[in-house]
Image 1: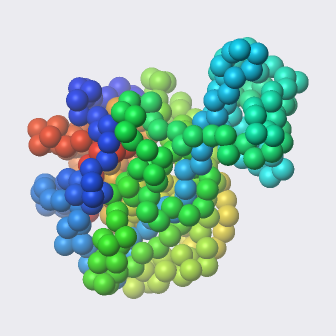
Image 2 (image 1 turned 90 degrees about the vertical axis):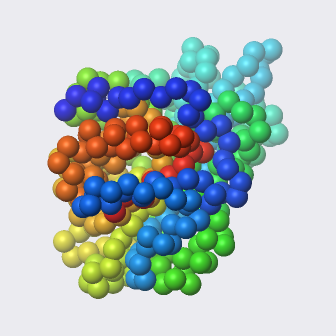
Length: 338
């Protein structure tokens, strides 16, 4: 399948630079695949489209201050953390690359230092850090957000708890504590999982054929409570609705013939048209970058729900969103697919 099929034109004016306030006042497009029907609403009214017993699966991963800028010898350097290991070992992107050779030592300030241990084929490095390096970092906003008024708090979900992501699970940014309580009062079950989002999730694919694309691995967790909620939903026939593609990646990776079990794991699952879905019945998601794995996942979901020409359909929905002045990408508006 050609990557170019998932390309579309988006003028920069559609890219949201700041979240709306309050968060749940963003626009919401609702698409019922079986009826081929599009509705427009406000996100705070999402509970009108959810039923008692529905399980809403959210990713409680928290974005870490992964972008570390420092000076050394009068020069500026950057270390962008991609993944952490126990004992101060870190995988990261760096700039400028030639300065970060194997054995290079850097003092970053604040009692923090690091040494380059490995240089990988893709240009990333493996470091050994000493000291609290995250205290020196900033929360990384996506490169298409240029407005300095956007803060690190804007780029966290209200239910974020476990540090580990370098990019936010952005579909969850629309929720407020009040909206979550209203959903619970209406009988919707909130189920928390963890997937620590890597930066590669949001990057476009540059290979011609999507089958040649290699997904990065991401760490996930499903605890006993979540496994029980999800298994009860499957037995009861209640809908499982994923908030964001990151929640989808957990659910579709961790489901077994016997159901869900509490586990920690990692996944490099790549979901695109042709994939056979196991668990997810509904999806809340944002409007994604062209040629990204995220728009491919959404097209696959439409196919699974019965859309005959899922790629054309997702692009048609995006054209409708543009005509209705929806805002795109991380701080943009949302869609509910059922």
